[in-house]
Image (cartoon, rainbow, N blue to C red; front, side, top):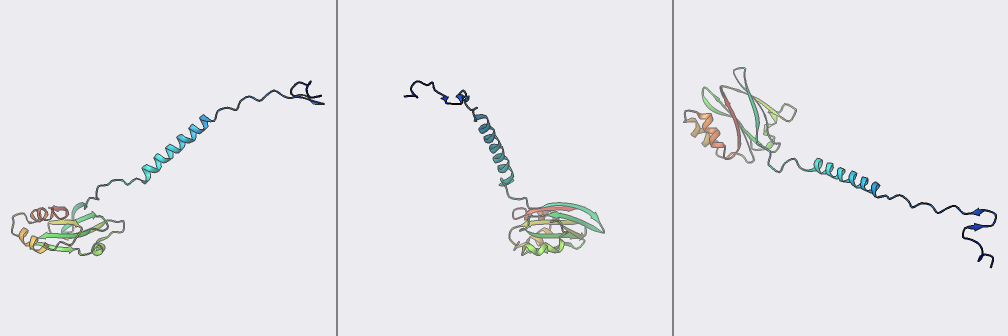
Length: 168
């Protein structure tokens, strides 16, 4: 009975209860900021982890410079590639390296992932390929009979390998 005649919020000895608290602010802005940060993080991860290119690596990057009675060839090829090196001197074309395994090029490594070779004579040809060149001797003999043997060999090998060459 005593409660029926009392106003809401009256407690004996305490007075009136405080007013109702205002409504809590919306968390939409905070959640939007979290979503934006997550989207940026996903974009950065996608860019970092996405493969650079679906195109195969080019076969050979090479630079040539004259020196010590021949040509220096500095080159870089994919790790799994086989390498063929042919020099052109007074006697004609000669095979310096005909790879049958990827590690055959190791003697020419300079320690930074690239390779360097010195070839006596006036020309050098580098070819990077996936399988050993079985008919290299025949192509060499055919190119030897032309007026520009190194260029002819480069043309003959171009269908089966990535070729770089220079002649001084």
